[in-house]
Length: 74
Image 1: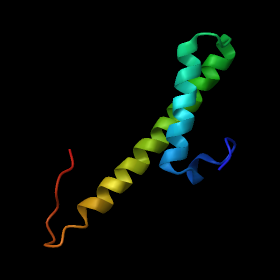
Image 2 (image 1 turned 90 degrees about the horizontal axis):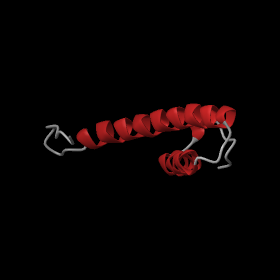
Image 3 (image 1 turned 135 degrees about the vertical axis):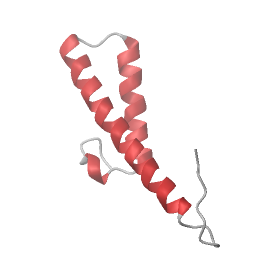
Image 4 (image 1 turned 180 degrees about the vertical axis):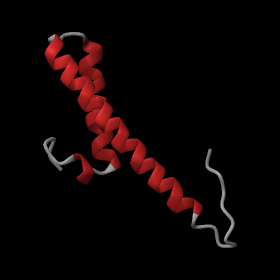
């Protein structure tokens, strides 16, 4: 999936990879302020996407117990 793919279509791996790139750029300290603000905004959205996908995975796993019980993953 390309960098311009809609956020809601990204897999966890795609969103996480882009989030890592955003973090690296921000930590480098070489980006102008406007770009840094845009990167920060993009990073927040990517982080939320990753968290949503992790939450969905946790819910699916908790439903997989054979005996019908749930297991907390936290």
